[in-house]
Image 1: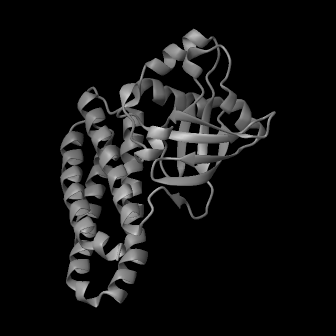
Image 2: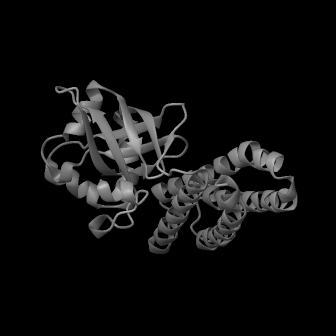
Image 3: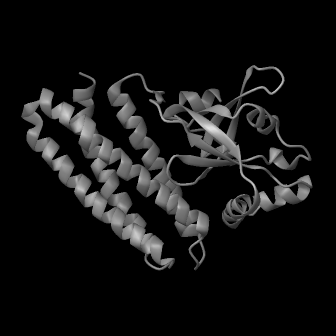
Length: 265
């Protein structure tokens, strides 16, 4: 957890390259906060999923019991810290989500087999409100968001390269979640950050206009990627992911050169 917090969610060792978060629950008996690192699955929008495998233990992990008693939890994703509502999924919804997880990583099925129990699948839905940033400056905040996109792009590129001829359900969700995240980030910049910069620094009008054009170009790339995902066909996915990576990485570097000196004064 110390490594996670010190490195904006990046850790080494056996968890290097994994999607990780820190989940803080309130103890069902003690009432004290309890934090654990967990792998998670993107689920689109404002929701992520965690699975109570406990390494194949026959008992549900304590954090599951805690959130059943106290569903309001705190999530740290390396960039933001935010409050969330936790819900244990049931029935067909739980089974469909778990099947997605197993399709991407058969280890989940092995954990369930060894444990002798149905592994709980928990949805963490962000509660509306301003998140807390791990970074200490506005420019640092922007860079940490960008670095999170860079890491996710790398994970998706590796997942696409390692996938079979059929487009997996969880891979599709991962890609769509990234598309939604990039789109939302750019909308917030277009409607909030960019007008503020333009008002305080009119000398940067041309540079800001160029960044807006890049947003429009990336939006078109996102549309093409979403069209491939909507077709359900694996063909062409790698090329569209590579196109997005090239466009987005170039844009992120450009935006950092223009904005970070301004944001940090």
